[in-house]
Length: 268
Image (tube, rainbow, N blue to C red):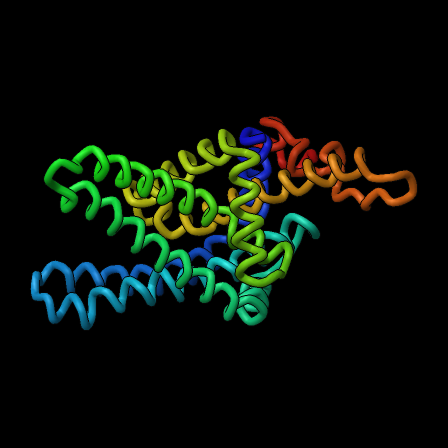
């Protein structure tokens, strides 16, 4: 499924690269501003500056602004996948519709991540005496929980936009998707790390396109998983009660193009 997701993500980006670059700029510039402010505050080494500027900027950047903009991006990508067309305005429509739930979800993930990172450090370093083995065990468990949280965060915002449910339902759905598709999600995480690395290493084009590439990929993964589960639900549903299937993969033009279409798009 990862290969099909990458293929869908490539063609969505290829077909709509202009508007995606613009949306990616709207996503990356504000977030980068808060990150640079936070890094500057931490670089001073002054506890009062870190507490008053650094930490609030990190929380606002990663816990509020990024989630809100990411929900808007996912909504736009959903329109591009469903309708094969869309506009930058779809991003703002998504922001208007999901901003409150997206901010709540983002703050929840920041809080959970902060607690788990603290636990990894505390149990490994501070639990001394004859309890070193217990400290390392608890630290390892916290580290695994942190990885699981990161994997669920990858699906949380596409799930929020697709299902339109509350924070608890969205978090539960994201966790179930990770538990049911662990290898796929590890592969997706590696792709996300790769996108981040390329975006940082090859500025400025990839830096400003990285946000779009990220959410196009994650939305594509969620879309194909939803199709898989729709087929499974149809196979197990009683006669006459089967759900309506989403777009058939064989009829999805994003999944049925090859290298020839890349070289000669006018012949499609």
